[in-house]
Length: 135
Image (cartoon, rainbow, N blue to C red; front, side, top):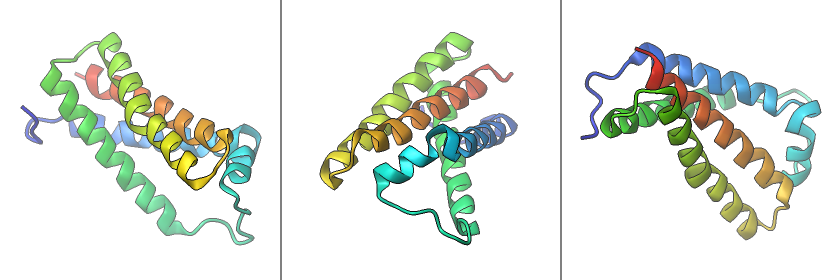
């Protein structure tokens, strides 16, 4: 049964922070940032991103970590391997494939899929491992 009761909130918060930190690194120009901007067809703003972007992103990652924790508990997942599989599956099925579908309809190239799908798989995997193994 999926329920919010009994979830490990410190693990969920740490999982969201971990994804946020990984994404901050991932979207740096020397990692995937330049290719992502090219794929998205955007120019970096001269004054930097708006603070609300970071707030919305963190809240989204917090919701994702919460849902992963709910799924993990409902599935009885509690080991590193089970967290790894859960994260890889949800990252691929829910993030990478959606990035691919969006890119097709938006006429975007493969770099946008690699950037957004790649961090989705990595982020979900890290979050799922954290929420499944944190006792």
